[in-house]
Picture 1 (cartoon, rainbow, N blue to C red):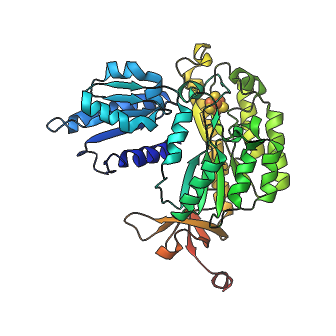
Picture 2: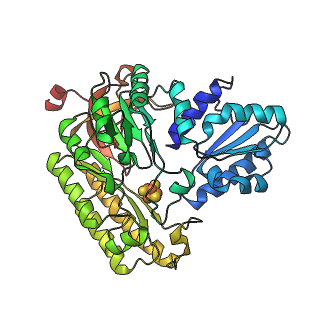
Picture 3: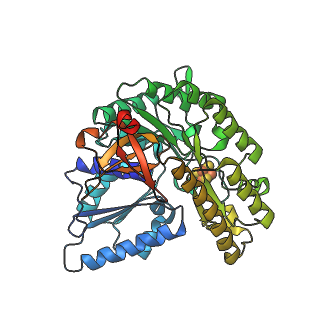
Length: 433
Ligand code: SF4
């Protein structure tokens, strides 16, 4: 979502005469779009600004804006701690960035814009053309969260759930397709909680997927991130009816223990989670899954952790994110008794080894097979091309050409490493020969 937000910030400031530059040592305005999920990300902001101060010691100071969730969470604190910052702008206020830049330039004052104006933000985004021209593009359709998991800052930094008008989503999708998008990923903190009242009809994520599916030129559709509680029957059915909906689902579970799920306030059980997986596999057996795991959550016993290991063995996730539990200020679990870092590290190590095994096994199973790959771009400074399989696995191949970009082509897989597959473009006749 931050990647999407950064692109939209760039679209807005473009209207005020700024252009995006790769030269961060010689710029008039520096926007740091931030994430607050992990503690490290906050400190990274201050380190980045420290580096910036050094680089501009003998030059005109650029306008420095900190946007995103760190700005939202730290707001005044941040302005106090780092005088080099001109404004902090929360993720629901960046639509005001033109005015903020004017105010800074005119009044020379330091500003705090951290209101939750999500309706105003979506209204502003609707008036702006999304200038992105990537083969694989994002559209934010939903923001915020009402779930209040006990470890998470999102409800406090992004605000409550709010969905965007289906008309505007389809308009943006059509524009992206005209710009060359062949794949669209719908984004939301709780994307499958999407809910928009339009006349007498309530639009859900399944309705948006069906609308998108009708668009000529669009080859692939994805959505992220989903909450198990919102994996409704109508959404699951989409995997039967919509071939453009890719057979890969990121469905965070965090732990394999019902005891810990309860402590986390996740509002579902492992049995319910496994039922969703079964229902999806019944409909489309080729679907693969990924998840997020938090290791060493307060109160996690050896038994709880073993249940997480069992769950991974059962589902065989092909690609997951896993972290040691990280205390976030203001969240209920930050006040709970923490477990020792040594135990957390040991468990993370075991869990990541297992996840890596499944990831590699999945890669290995693709060797000597041809996979459908949507080609996204040529790699910088290399005569190689990059694309992704239906399961979102990165593929690098060497004998492509510029005409392949934006097309789904068959790649014969010859090798792999932990993260990627490597192959060559081959016709079926060539493979048979
Ligand atoms: S559902 Fe996701 S975004 Fe919402 S509180 Fe839980 S972890 Fe955070």
